[in-house]
Structure formats: structure tokens, C-alpha cells
Amino acid sequence: MEPLNERKDQIHRTGEQPFTLACNKDSLAGAVSQRACVFCGSRVVLYPIADALHLVHGPIGCAVYTWDIRGALSSGPELHRLSFSTDLQELDVVFGGEKKLTAALLELIDRHSPKAAFVYATCIVGIIGDDVEAICREVERKSGIPVIPVQSEGFKGNKRAGYTAACNAMARLIGTGDTKTVAPHSINILGDFNLAGEIWMIREYFERMGVEVVANITGDGRVADISRAHGAALNVVQCSGSTMDLASMMERDYGIPSIRVSYFGVEDMAQALYDVAEFFKDSPEILDKARDIVKGELQELLPKLAFYKEELSGKKAAIYVGGTFKAFSLVKAFRLLGMEVVMVGSQTGTEDEYRELAEITDPGTIIVDDTNPLELTSFLEEKRVDIFVGGVKERPIAYKLGVGFCDHNHERKEALAGFMGMLNFAREVHSSVMSPVWRFTPQWEHLGAELQLLAVNNS
Image (cartoon, rainbow, N blue to C red):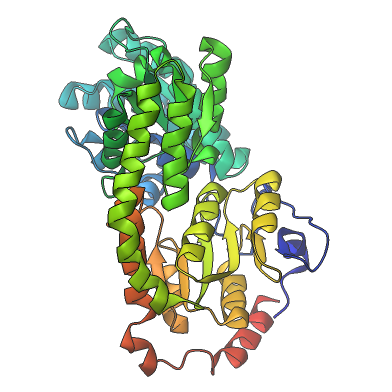
């Protein structure tokens, strides 16, 4: 099946032509794009701040769409698990929703006593022109807590623009807290959303090294910690797409440098610890402790991985995730298991990131930006993959094709970061690929006719 003409410049095959890939474009209308809107991008970044109120100013559908979209766990308050909306109706569109927003904020703050409130502007708010900024200032004055507008009107662009809106909102909170008790060897963890409790594992590694974690931004996040995040010595950025803008703002405003890391896979997890240790060169014992942690974890992990590598060697994998930085780690993780990555893509990658993916993948690997279900189905059929790694929207595609699936995005319940996460990942991939259920599926035989029919209907 040939892709739509408007999509061809967002698909690249490694080694078959010089690298060129368009990305960071607005989603193509009618292509059923996997990329989400600006509001969704901002919501998924801010949502894990557990002691804040999150109010969606817009129709109820916006709040429903993003409610609990990340499986972000909290070690304490769970106000973030509630979804609040002003539920704008037709009369509000005609006469404005400012009074409704003010009343909703005052009632919710009085009822739940949050440490701060984030107010998300949606598409309809941008159209009718409600002054969300002014309402937030008024309610902040009355309530005595930070009330922060998130300028995430959906028509502004794509999901990456939502990340920027979220970072702008958090930047208004950072710098308002007291940093007197922050240790010299301290970091902020940016871009981890504590899916399945992963940030607790990562924090433990750093604390065992003798490094204080000031703020989680945003998994298991707290308003007070974020407000004093400007006191940390270093920002450690995991998901560069979602929080790199915030790291850049903090470097500009407070002189805090940042490094980009990944906690997925053995190589990248070890390198993340070493990179942080190298930053604190004035304390050699931090590097010594990092080496001890890596050595101890690998001595326990590698013998267990050997079994899975023997079983999985030569199997084919396809990857489609939210950000490309995670894709780099997944390519390495599959290679550690002896598997071949034949397709890799993301919703929000940049040209430089895709170029790097092209450099580390094998000839013939499909690299795709912001794809859609029809394209994914075609790629999986062409490459005859054994397992597909993606998120909740990709799971039905894999199962309909009779392909194993591994959830590596928002809704997973298994920790896949850290050294123990690599073992969990290998175990899940193995159980999915080697499941006897695939013997009872038609797999690829019937797909050719179905894809041709879908292509005709789409045209």
C-alpha cells in the first residue's frame, strides 16, 4: 500500500536514500493521525503534579479525553486523579465562560485545598476570547495560592506546542520557593512521569550515590518542590520532548545546566548515573558509588537476560512511541536481546533525532513521523514483525494482526525503567512473542485484500 502523497515526506527508509524527513508538522486532516492536540500535550506533562488542582476550561469532552491519561502514581496526595471541567455549553460560547470559570475555581479550591491550580485553555476558549489570565490573577488574589493559566488552545499547533505551554506554566511556579536547605550536590529529575513507580527507583539510585533530588518534574510531583527547583545544581532531562524547554528556561533564568539521559535499557541507565556523577567532579565518591551500583545491578541482571536473548534472537520488532529519545533506548534494548528493529517512529520527534535514529538503525529500517493506523498496518505486514511496541492506540492494531504487543507508553502497569525494568521488559517481550496464542491467528494471509480495501475507501 502506498502512503498518501502528503505523508510521503514523513517516511524514511534507512540506507535507501539520503536522509530527509519532515516532522513537527500539524497533523494532516483526514489521515487519522496519531499525534494529539496542544491541550493534550500540556495536560499529560502537568497532570502528574499530585497536589495541584487541574481544571479544564472547555467542553466536557476535552477533560474526558485526557483524564488519567498517564498512569502516574503518587506517594501521597491524589488530587490529580480527579478530572474537573467547566463544561462549556452553547450559551457559554455565545456569552462567554469567564463567570463560570471563576465560580468553578473558587468552589474547587475551597473544597479540595490544593497547593496550586492549573487552568487549561482549550480550543473553544481561544475562539470566544475568555481572559483566562485575568481570571487566574483574580482567583489567586482571593485564594492565596498560585493559580496558573496554561495557554494550550488546541488550534495553536500540535502536541509539541502543548509541551511548551506546560513548561511556560511551570516556569511561573519555579523560583517562588525557599532554597536554603538544598544540598550542593542536587538535581531535578525532568521528564519522568512515574509510570508504574519508576521515578521512585530512579530517585533511589541517585540517593545511593549521595545526590539529593530536589524536584520530580512531573511524576509524583509536588508544588512546593517545583517552586524551589531553581536551587538544584543540575537538571537531568529524561523525556527531552516534553521538558527540554523548561530546562532551557531554567538555564537562562537561573544558570542551571542540564543533561539529557534515558533510564531505559542497561546501557542508557548506567550512562545516566555516570553522567550525573561526572558532573559533580568535586566529589569523587559519587562516581565510585555509581560504579558500585552499576556493577552490582549488572552482576544480578545479565545472567537472567541470557535466557531471553537465546530465545528471542533473530525476532523482529517495530517501535512507535511518543518521543524519539525513548526510541533510541528501545533500539539498544532489543539489540541486547538479539532482536532486529525493522520499524521505528514517534509522534513528536525532531529532524536531528530522526537523523540519529537513521544512523543507529540497520539498512531498510522504516523511520516514520506521526503515522496513522493504516500506515502502521502496512509497515507491520511488510516487515512481518514479531512484536510491536507502542501505546494504548497501537494495541488494537497489533492484536488484529496477530502480533505480540508491549505497552511502553502512558497506561502500562509494569516498571520498564532502571536495571530491574530491563528484566521486566525482556520478560514481557518474551511472553508476548513466544505465546502459543499466535498459532491460532491468521496473521498475514488475509491482510493484503483488507489493506487494498482500506486504501480504496481512504482515497
